[in-house]
Image (cartoon, rainbow, N blue to C red):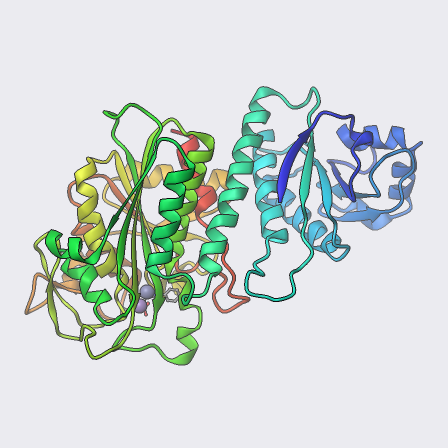
Length: 488
Ligand code: BES
Ligand code: MN
Ligand code: ZN
């Protein structure tokens, strides 16, 4: 999918479908009004003949419409009280409908409708996301490829102010990064191994200036004392990789934003093997890593004016004669010892050494992203990402970026009382906290490794892929994270 700004008048853009919207079906506004005039009132007459359209959120596919170059018109009634959420919902329904016609190109001309929040730039970014959600397809491993939407045109006339042009650039970078994140996440683990992820990072360093990649291999991990990450890896034939990507968008002296991703390319549970139902979906246990890759790609594409570092703990969790076992005591890079009580609580072990490694960058803030606990699906479902922090303003920024982007997140507490649940009689801590508050005790574990900087943990187990549904990646919380960076 390629996005393209078109300077031609709206009626002269040749495409399969022209998508327009109005706040009202009685008096057409904006592009809808223009198309109505061009078509000799064909649009308003059609609308009149379709009384169901008067309800906000409804849409109609009209074909043919005289006087314009587009083969068909999709008219959305977004209502007077349109919000970006209601607009996105309506647009999504309409796009799913026209997808059955297998369009090659569409024109999106909806950025002139009014939102209650009054933010035209949000329409552009949110619709790019919706288009990606509806038209993205992963047929890499199918012998018969699906038809694809090739181009999305956006009219660039006097309504396209500089502010909107910037929003448009950001929207394209967001959509491209979402596709990249989805491709990595959807890739099966016999292709997407830690080594494969490391290769992606090296490729990005080759393709972008001011972008550096360093791969820490297992020999080097041993030297650094990364006993936790290595313990997870020891049952797998695939060597673990700690992938470090650096985008230099500001002076070297400026402190970087660091994003750390859980990259468990497959989580069998290890010796505490998961049952068959829980194991399907575990190729998505590297969605945190895939999101970090998306952030880094967008940072490079937009040349974001910040120093941004992505760290990925890429590892496979397998049972094997050499695998780590319950009651093993391991020593993390921080020096803290951990009693392993469940080998399926591997994400926190893979992450804790990456969090210690992050200290060397003297970060402005560290945000980790992890499909860490199934308990997240119980508490917040698939609606919101869980946020935990040791620095309240950071969590505030993230939750706010979630509200702004519509990619919602919600904070959960890290009260001291929860820390008691991971005390171990044999080591400094144990890697599980029992049945209660599973997402919080997992975050408490990570907190012990993030003492030296401002840190937030985002548990994306519920939001990053469509668990239990069609098992496809959502690329969340990429929209939230990019919004967070755009606000900096
Ligand atoms: N990767 C899983 C968490 C997960 C579960 C993500 C379902 C997405 C959907 C994680 O490694 C895990 O297995 N966590 C255990 C922790 C438990 C052993 C304390 C869990 O959630 O059951
Ligand atoms: Mn696990
Ligand atoms: Zn896992």
